[in-house]
Length: 352
Ligand code: TXA
Ligand code: MG
Image (cartoon, rainbow, N blue to C red; front, top):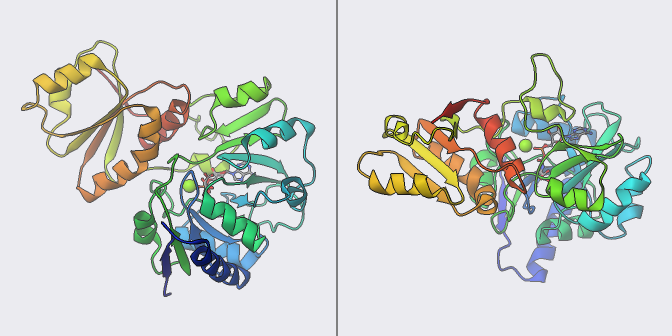
């Protein structure tokens, strides 16, 4: 398949409208369109078209039991939402008002207009109203509901740049729309409002602290490993995820035995840490010659979240064989960051 690529960075409204016309035509004809969002890039099909949605699973190599998020525009938001869901629980209205458009996916009971393949036979659907300029304009302009997972080959880190979308999906989709790198860099927060208390199924761009300001009735069970045979409430969370080819391990600093890093961070490895860890910084500075691997330091968890998937992908390009990531605070976006990283590591932790 020939993939059309359009980069809308610095584009005029006229150019964008031309691209939205093309995307609308492709989607209505059952094709696939990749588009930017504020979290990660999405691989979209018309959510009500069963055959088109099946193509998403094929293009990504995604397991059929992993439901898709349906994206809608923010024009007449409640009216629009009502087309796809059975009810809008009263408790969810404040969340909608505060966080849409934005990186929050809300799980509702679904309407029959959405085929079973879109929601992997669940009776619920995750709806998201993105805030990214291109995503928002495309959804409002086309007036279509777009089912879209992250635009990566299943299992790989989600793409946050135009280039990575092309790398994974050239020849597999009809159109790739490029724009800025994703602002947040981690996927949306998912909250299920069909249960009481409302349950966060995946932490993301909207933090637990943000949610708690609006509702005290929010539960998250934490970034913990599932027991054998246990099913996560967001089916996709059970798969190997966010993983580069390199082996990934978390580093927990308990004894401050930084000397161990010299044995660990060898030539083909990468050490990543977030925020100010003065003693670690000093150790690295004093042992420049002994620490042979690469070191990436992010100023905080926000910057780390924005860049992490790209750094993991770059590590593969650089043939890095082992990645060591120093655990960070599970507050704010740090909770989502640690969620993705502990998964990528398969919950492997080294204490130093
Ligand atoms: O930020 C995002 O959410 C990005 C952009 C493109 O919008 N999308 C995204 O989609 O991350 P995906 O498919 O990579 O992740 C969707 C997650 C999966 O873990 C899936 O199991 C869960 O959402 N999910 C979708 N519908 C669900 C439902 N009805 N009930 C429970 N979990 C659901
Ligand atoms: Mg994904």
